[in-house]
Every structure is written in C-alpha cells, then in structure tokens.
Image 1: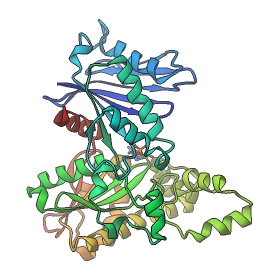
Image 2: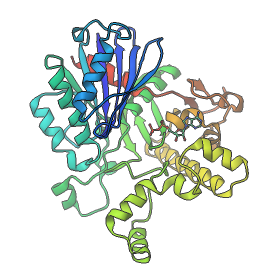
Image 3: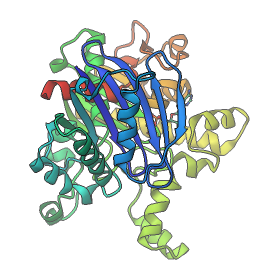
Image 4: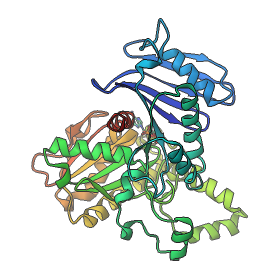
Length: 395
Ligand code: ADP
C-alpha cells in the first residue's frame, strides 16, 4: 500500500509518499509559506528536485498541489489518487487521551481539538492539515500518529510535577514528553541490532536535534523522558533553555521589565546553545567556532553535552541499568564531538568509545568498543517511515 505521510505546520507542510511493502520513498517534498505566497518543493524517487512558486492561500491548495505533483503524467509516481491507500498525519499533542496512534474519526478529531491548548502552536496546524486532506481525499482512511503517545506508559512518579495536585486535575498539568515516534522507532531498532527482545531491553535514546529529548525505554515502554508539559523542559536545545530554576523568571522579569510573553519568547527562541554562544543554534557553526577558539561556542557545546550526560545517568538509575544508548537526529547522527563528550562522562557505566567508529556521520553504526559494558550506537531516526508503518498497521 502507498501511504502519504503528512507533517503539517502553521505555514509549512512536509510530505512523503511511502510504499509500505518495500518501504521505499516514492516521492517527497515540502510546501512552504502557506498563507503568505507559497512554494512547492517536490522530488520523485531517483528524480530531480524541483522548486516552484505556487499560490497557497490555505493548506487546501497546498495539499492539492501535492496531489497534482504525485499524480502528474511526467513527474508523478502514481496514476491516480486511488493508488494512495491511506494518509498518516503527525499530530504533536494527544494529551492523556491518546496512548497509541488512531484512525481519525469525527470523534477523534474533536478529541485532538481538545488538546489544542496544550500545544497551541502545533495542534491547530496539524488539524488544518487533516481537514484539508479529508476534503480532497474523502474516501481515504486517515491516521493520527502522536508525538506524545509513546510516553503515555510513564508511571505517575515520572509524569507528576511537584505542584499542587489540583492543577493536574483541573488542567492536566503533567509531563507528556515528545519525539515519541522517534524514540519508539530508534529503541526498537536498537534492540534489533543488539539481538535482544524489545520486551527485555533497557535503552536510553538521545534524540538530539534542534529540539532535543532523551527517553528511558524499559522493556519496550517509555518510563521517563526529558520534555514535559511542553517541549521546553529538559535538555539545553538549539534555542530552548531546557531545565532552569523557575525563580529565574521573576528575577529576569524585574531586572529587564519583561512580561510573561517576552519571557517565554526568550526561553523558547533566544536561549539554548544559541543564547549561550551568541553565535548560532546550529552545531556546524558551533563546532567550527569552538575549533577557531571561540570561548562561548566551546562553553555552549560543553553545557549541551553535560546536560545530555546527566540525563543519561539519571535514566540508567531510573531503569536500574542500561543495555544500550542510541544517538539519533541531526546532532546525534552527525556531531561526533558531542557523542564523544557525552561518553566521556559515562565511563563509570563501563562505556568505552571506539573513536574511529565515532568519526562516522549519519549512518547506523556501533560506536562502543567490543569490551564496552554498555553498547552505544548511532541509529538514524526515520519518523516518516514510523508514521507509515503505524498507519498501515491500523488501516
Ligand atoms: P529538528 O528536526 O529538530 O529541526 P534536526 O534533527 O534536523 O532538528 O537537527 C538539526 C540540527 O542538527 C542542526 O541545528 C545542526 O546543529 C545539526 N546538524 C545537522 N546536520 C549536521 C551535520 N552534517 N553536521 C553537524 N551538525 C549537523
């Protein structure tokens, strides 16, 4: 079956058409600047990547252009819409309502809508994408795959904040976690690589991208993860602060005369390695800067790696041991220096890094030595493929 995977943001929409039998990507692309002017990037398998300006006042036009490209006589990859068996939608927040992926019915749509205030920037955009697809492909089954669902197995000791219980009861203020599709995909693959049953493996997955989170996967279930009610908690990220002393908010607010909106903007967009380095949120710039002697770039990389190592250590404690650690996403797959720095802290777990293997970028590889007590891997994530698999399993 061919599955169209859609990842819809407020002004952009990423798509892939995946053949679920061969798991080949038949075509992929991106609609950008939706609601502004509109740009479609499209690439069929083995073909040339094209970019064209297309008027996209709403997501409906954007999806229509995607369908037109996929079914086009020359550059298309299917003869008609009938050859698309299902659509898998990435949905950011499923709250406590969704512990698994689900077929989208009217009821499910409403339940996702009810999670909007937990992810006001993401969920409404995801729903717009679903609506647009439903309009243009009314007979095709649609599936929602949630970033939060994998973490619904966390026990209450991991998901409760030390706040008045009434906020959990009234507003569902608790830790949810994100990147669940990636953590699930990578932890499964890690168990396969080490040749152990998924249900009998302790893995720590380090999803280190611009947004970054860590997950403790015990016997196939997420038991803790570093992001919380929102993706702001946990690691120091590209531009997000991660964990801080909450009292800093009042302190900075008074000193800088900032209101809550300005503070949240600072924590989400001006902090992280960008804020510390004052140079960039991108690790390519940071590593180049650090090599050239930029002190703040060096500090930013150290702060990032130290926080990762502390979380890995705490999750080894939470699971009473760890069999394997997997690095994934843009930084996890490509930045050898970060992996090396993290593993240096983890010598007490019996981890020994194979420096030569660690010099590899962007491919699946074991980076620990044969005598390392805990195995360490780079496992490229593939959220689109994971969404396609979930979608096929449900339809
Ligand atoms: P997201 O999906 O959260 O936007 P990604 O997983 O794409 O993030 O990761 C983006 C980050 O990964 C970039 O900011 C950059 O720091 C890092 N990155 C990606 N590719 C490379 C590379 N080849 N070398 C070094 N860093 C890279």
